[in-house]
Image (cartoon, rainbow, N blue to C red; front, side):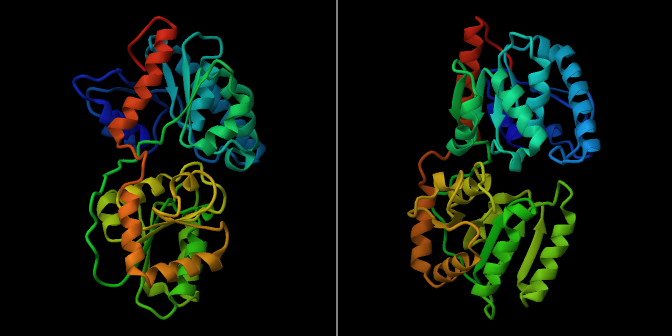
Length: 370
């Protein structure tokens, strides 16, 4: 979705680069179908299934076979053979793009949206990233300083390295009208055990056991985590808050969703590379609570939001209760959140990418398509 948003924002009459998108055979839901006719779009190769970090030797063998097949298909495709710059938009795409361009002079840009460690990438993925992908990259665009720091030891000295937040569809809120009704706490993140939904649920129940406050968890459950949704509902029932806890599933209208929240939380149980949801919270002017580590801590400084010790449900509960009781502080945080320096709309993200694409194309004496 970050790529779709950026490409949509880049399609102005004076656009500085011409995008062409090549993807593997898509799953049932093809987000790239949303692209305008002005963007060349092709799907070739084999479907790339989730679960690449699994330790199962059978799944790893299947992953390796799919990567090699996709690399061959990518290398031979006219969109790649005629491109001035190739940009790999995900970790999986970076793997087969690096293989495809291993003996090519075409500049390769790698987008980093995951931490460079085995916990995030799996053992196979980490080895691919550090031994094959990053050494081949001519430019690395990371979504945070934290993400880039983990990659630096493996990046060539002549490679461009930059931090550009992913396109997140930010709608900058200049003024947020006060809400009425029961307090609503929310988290926008895919349903996944490490995203911290269970920790937030526990903290919410401790802070508001007998109140009329509501908790909303917005996000789908991809990557084989559908059962976790059931676990969350069961735990809410055990804690006696089931009627005030709402699992909303995937939500398209993020602006309306955030507009009804009084507090927004990011509380992943391991360091988050960036926390796209945090940028969305801040831009919407929602009082924001984040775990004090990783990319989110780069954006929240105590004035525009509150940092909480990671993996400390008791402190998270205390902070939620304090903010619920202090409407003036929530208003102060909301105003500061909307003024957070460095927040970029999708068009600004596209322009920042264009600078890097032009630099790489100029190194080869060419300019044009990525």
